[in-house]
Image 1 (cartoon, rainbow, N blue to C red):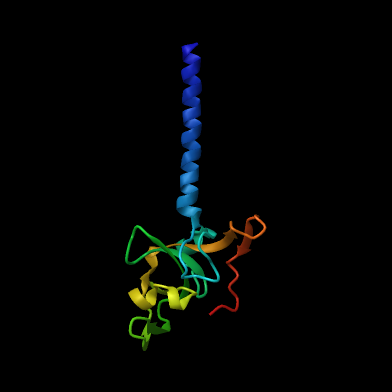
Image 2: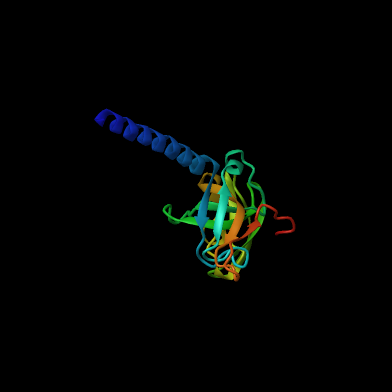
Length: 166
C-alpha cells in the first residue's frame, strides 16, 4: 500500500518536472508574455497591455526597422523596456537629444540597434542612452492584448504588421 502511494507521488513528480522543463524552455527560447507599464509607447501600447513576444526573430537576426521589441534596459539590467527599432547597424539616425534639444546625426555601430518610444515627449530611449547592443534584445512583439477593453473582453491585435510605420 505504501509502495503504491510513493509510486504515484514519484510519477506525479516526474510528470510535473517534465512539463515544468517544457514550459521553461518555451518561455526561455520561443517567447514570453509581458505586461507593459509606462507611457513611452503610447498610443500603440498602453500601460497594462499584455504583450506576447517571440524570440526566434532575435535568435536568427531577423529584427527589422519598425519592429517593436522587448529588451533589457541599458541603464538597469533588472528592468525590461519596450521600444520601436528605428535604426539597425550601419544606419544613419537623426538623434534629437531631449535634455538640450541638440540635433545631430549618428551612425548605429555594428552589433547595435537604435530604439525609440512612440511617445517621443515621454520616452527614455536611445536618444538618452545611445545605441543598444543587439544582445540586450529579448524578443519581438507579435501580439498585443488590452485587458482593460471597454466591453470587458481581451482585445488582441497583431503588432507584427508594421507596414507604413516610421
